[in-house]
Image 1 (tube, rainbow, N blue to C red):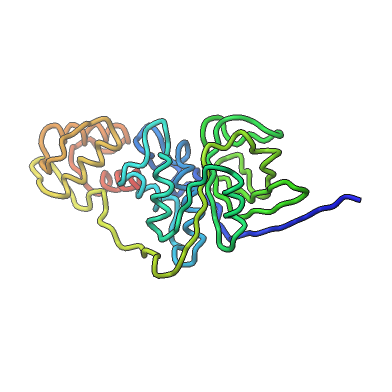
Image 2 (cartoon, helix red, strand yellow; image 1 turned 45 degrees about the vertical axis):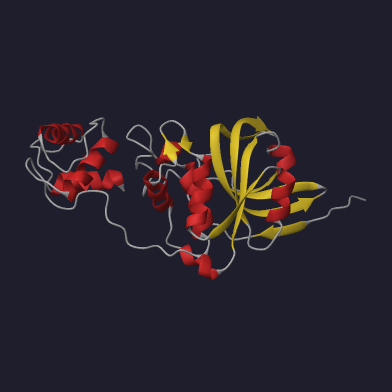
Length: 269
């Protein structure tokens, strides 16, 4: 007779997709790379964070901005490992960076635990998690016939969502794991309104101030302008604006009016 032992612990976690049209084309971290190609880190963090009732409004776009503003991503490399723990802690989670999978399984067996796994390239048991590097959220752990199963939430196009056996489909492919939980409500940091990173008024040559600095920062992110962020709309900023307008088929007049500002806003998210 076959003996089956099944112990299961599952915590609610959302499943966002990094290629969602609401943020998929937003740059991460520059115009060459976007959320669709490199945004599994912010998306997995959003899965975990938004699953808590106090953070239901959080999306991958929210975490994209956090990673960008705090330097937790790099062109061609995606999200730095340090950014995962930092993003979770920002929203009140206690984070544990595990050195072994048994320690991760033990923690995930507790109430209210969520996790994130970073996979390296490779295939095991017919399952390919990634051809490079890929973050996935985890919401559950169970044991059956002496094997460990994890409930996965895949932000990418392979859509590996649901229960997967670690020993059969993951062993040898895991590069890093984190578990996390909310200790108490008082540790939760509420979202607050933030100043837009894009210009919100019309600008032209001769304009000065904080709005011009926003414009220069945006152009540096979205193009290869390499402008000095000095808040002065001079000849170099004028050229960068015209190059931007030409690239996106806008009226090439060097004036940051309604349509140019709208395009910058859409790309900056």
